[in-house]
Length: 123
Figure 1: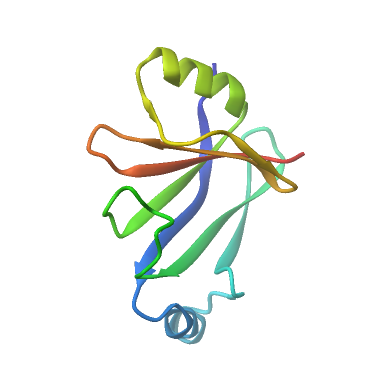
Figure 2 (figure 1 turned 180 degrees about the vertical axis):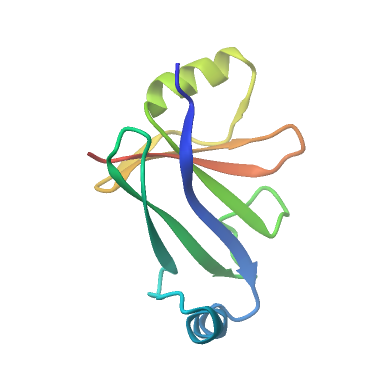
């Protein structure tokens, strides 16, 4: 079973997300939106994909319960099947699977309590 197929996003806390977006736009040429940068890529199956790079306010609770200042979103091929396997393996599942128009999501924790986001993109 294929598990992670790529990096779906890199999210990090900062004091001023707007200033951070502007700095990266000005100095590194990363085209930004209010949601961060969408960096295009190609999946192993040849489909077009992307990775989000997003600064969050340092007050966000989105990374909780972890106290970490970052969170990585991993792209997966079949989230429901992977979650079933992870449960069997005793991995800590933090919430229920949710579906949006852009894909399915769930959050897990690694062995040090770092929150991880798993994402199956919508077709």
